[in-house]
Length: 286
Image 1 (tube, helix red, strand yellow):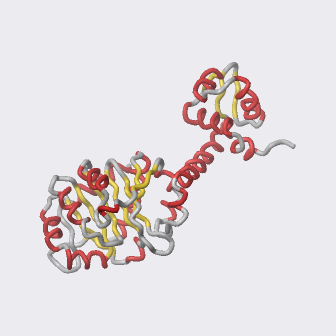
Image 2 (image 1 turned 120 degrees about the vertical axis):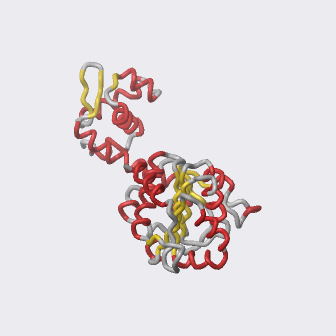
Image 3 (image 1 turned 90 degrees about the vertical axis):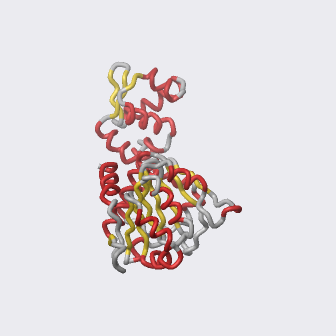
């Protein structure tokens, strides 16, 4: 029985590696393929033959390249492999996360988070942000954050960054903002007095849901509740360029839904530096 294209493309690691190599690097001769994949002629040639027979590769003289059909299949295969790798690397984390509040068009592209790692909470600093998170904020040119839960240290960390001329845009739910007004009056005043800051309220709390996100020009940090609405403070982080763009787009999605507010009245609080932050985001994702 003739193998299906699914079998040919996905059921052999060697064939998959060949397809991905030619998709990423273009036309190669057999020696280049063997050296790059560190395989022998006897190990790779039968697989090359199958790929050619299934019209996924074009073989001319001593070179191989993807056919048009091969390019289309590998493009979709790359998405599947990237998504599988993302979930496999931190399987125990992802299987219990509530992803329902990530908009579907962004959830379909979640593989763009790329190479991720987890920051476990330090038992000596259970009620503080992880030191790496604070350090990376201060290394950034700008920071954009969404928070659906109140953390007593967040405003202080963002104020410290803003006072170093780091642009900061912060979206919070109405309940978080109300709590900040009760417990963080000094930090709110500091935040307002900085030049390039913006505080935005999401009055429809179900929009953000159980999600906290921080993204800058160098990192993406995500805090997700589990499916039982519990929060264990494990932080998912990525520094991949594709992850930064994904995080910025997700931030702007919620930013466009929320209401920028002005400190001089009880409904709106928005500082005059917000245009700079928005311009940075627009430039980075365009």
